[in-house]
Length: 332
Ligand code: AQP
Image (cartoon, rainbow, N blue to C red; front, side):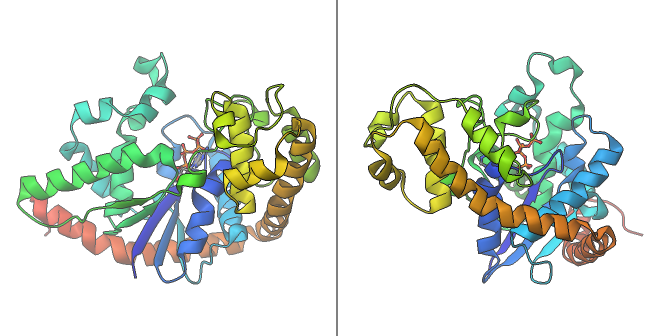
């Protein structure tokens, strides 16, 4: 039985990319593993977020995860700030990780853009906190989208350097679990950019709480090209938007891209988008309805998260206390 850790930022509402790249995988991995799933509100603070919105989005995303199939009786579901071990270990990792390592992180470059001087220092050390999230549990399996691969490599570098510097074999090696087929779902407005909660255009993503009408409208307006669908994958080269829509279809239908193309070869995007809309709606409708139901009892969501935090702390506190002993903190 492996210990799995993964997290999602409550910076907005989880979208189809989060679902296909991560959440769907988390649900499946609950069988036969110990799942620890976290609403990473400390990470959310690395860019400005309104406090009331952060609280509300933390509850909504908790409801969404439960609606998607995360079972809080089996898995541990909690919000990161409620377990202090994350911040304690992150500080130690801030002192282990090297500035140059963080400087190479492409997510930082993308998010900071041209105005590096003005972004929070939290955004820069984000990967150290992510390493702490995982290693505070000695988790070894991390199911994430492909966009997080570089951060996981860095987490392993940090673990190794800690072990080496202090002459211990304390932190284990992390294995990323990346579902290649749906690892990177792209924006509906720009096939070169990943679908993201923080994209200013709501038209760029399908939120897991979107109504059928909104889904239909977003897919109808999704950027495409004038060519019909090709019969094989080579025909999708240099057509990022077409590739993205076919990829979403394949991931949701549990088919290969080749199978989807065989079935839709020669069709224009009008009819293909209609089939895709039906498929997306059939997956999202039950999730959105269950989320609405669960959200009506905010007290129950808070109880679930409190209970999850207690269970998480029971695992992480002794591990982080041991790390603190290793680095030489006096524990009177
Ligand atoms: N477009 C995507 N395709 C596949 N997987 C994705 N993930 C995110 N976007 C895609 C995966 O979802 C998990 C949770 O992501 P996150 O909330 O921690 O942060 P993120 O990767 O930065 O996602 P967003 O939506 O782009 O959030 P914002 O805009 O707040 O930064 C991760 O496993 C991620 O790989």
